[in-house]
Image (cartoon, rainbow, N blue to C red; front, side):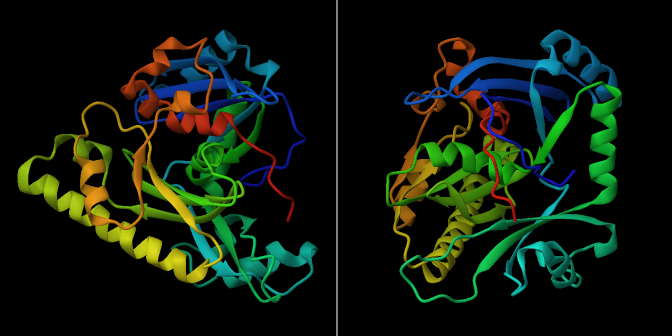
Length: 316
């Protein structure tokens, strides 16, 4: 299994996300010409030592055998690297990428599971070399995840990354012909993505966690806001230089719960791009899951829902 296995289109996926002390799951039904419908969500308290037993219970309770199941790696379980696309036939791409990553990883490339994501170029520009994203994770991490799900009798069809889960939600908020940036925070830190035409063009990690944002006060909070602003400025400037053919419509601040205050206003006064917040009911039908209307619940289930919106990746 690669990091994001290729599957035929389905009516929807079941996502199962392992967090620090809880396992979350969700199923979304894609409805033509309408918002995707969140059929259900579920959470199971699960200290890491009991993940196996909790997954077994989840599989039985939620009838996992009826779904195509996907999960996400944690933010520290993989590396996402922007590299120049090798000039080789498609069937040789992953082998060539492995050699290119040899000196870029913080572990031996022979111990890596690698997959690639294309970054489309300007269709109106002369043909030239372009960049791709390479995703690399330790074989051990992938094997442990596969074994954990297999022992719980869950047929895991794909392993994705948070960047793509965030891309899936961001794509639903795009204005045709314009790119959109999105910023989200959880216990692994901040994640900035830029999508255009439902493709991931930029992904950057920010070393500020949700807990820090929720608990900092006074000068400490101001310092965190400054750090976030600087990282955003650098990343968006880099994006403008590399992808000048894409105009950003706005930067969307994803749900952060009720405890983070003042960030939107601070960013709005220090960045050139318009800053907006949004709630998930703007793009998802939450009729069957009224509990998801709270800000805290939307923050907790953000990646779980993004993973359940999984789309078929282009075969490379």
